[in-house]
Amino acid sequence: MSHRDLSDLELRALAFVDERELVRDLVNLIAIPSVSGSDAESDVQHVLAKQLTELDLDTDLWSLDLPRLTSDPAFPGWEATRSEAWGLVASSGEGEPELVLQGHVDVVPSGDLGQWRTDPFTATVDGRDVRGRGTCDMKAGVVANLAAVRAIRSSGIQLSKPYAVQLVVGEEDGGLGAFATLDRGHRGKACIITEPTSGTITTANAGALTFELRVPGVASHGSTSYAGVSALEKFLPLHAALAALEERRNRDVHPLMAEYPVAYPLSIGKVSCGDWASSVPDLLVAEGRYGVALGEDPAAARTELEEAIADAAAADPWLRDHAPTVAWTGGQFASGEYAQADRALYDLVAAAHADVTQGPRPRERGAPYGSDLRLYAGAGMPTLHYGPGDVRLAHGPEEAVPVDELVAVTESLVLALLRTCR
Ligand SMILES: [Zn+2]
Image (cartoon, rainbow, N blue to C red):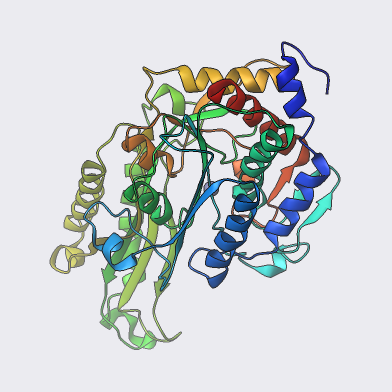
């Protein structure tokens, strides 16, 4: 790359960003299948703690007190059950960090292996992309966080103010790790979460609430189906009511969310119904995710869905007397917003990105999914997402990250650290 508006000091640090090293570190990290709730989720924290200690940072690696954290009224929820989990924070010095680089180390399961071209946890370099589970969501971001610190350390440049790396588990199923990190008292004056934003900066998250809908029926032999009540058929008007609710809630959305075809999706992800082909099913259980609007109280959003179900049930002769139930299970992500009044962090990251890419300042937008952003923003820290990869590839069998974005983000983080902590 050629450089514009960069000081000699900045050029000195950027010289220690090494593309081959970044790719190697990413491939190694993908090989640890740190699916949320798995043993490998704990293993990866220990591997990364060793790397952070080798960078001569003060490392806090601690075992989470799961009974206490999960019984806290503010606990954000989880879907994977764990008997152990680890927190990991590495700081360059005493005092509140000027800047925190944050990333989650857990990944979602691989899904149907038949849809993958290769083993999900054996990363492959494919042209200018690295492919594999967790590449963009978000091990490339984790690698960038460490590599930016490594570049600063290797350059020998002394930063007078402290900075920190915070690596968390359990982001994918609710935010256990971020909650525990804040609970332990770790803070910072500003936080960059290197979730994939493909050259944009995300300053707000919609929320997402996981719910379970149970629809009753009456079993009978399929040959006399008229003698029973099919829970599947009773689900259909409820499903239509949920679709109408989604449509209503997406008519007029926040400007940061306006680019999305559906800003706040309501989507059923899992349906189980019946246990025998020639029986009328007596129960349907549908599980889904429900988008929470920017600035919306999750409790109000829950009430709106419960009312939509109750209204649809009231219109059906069977459901009127056999009410379907809604339960709020698993991850409960409120929406979150980076303080719009404080533009310093956005300006810092936007200028750094423009300087390393020699392009325009990145576009600002909201994201339609929940993340740790809302927990950090809720704790009073200006927080945004800026990281390598395209979130549309996350959680799918084509998950990949462009090496060029991994390099550019790492370089931007180097500049952000230098410009904040000198
Ligand atoms: Zn993520």
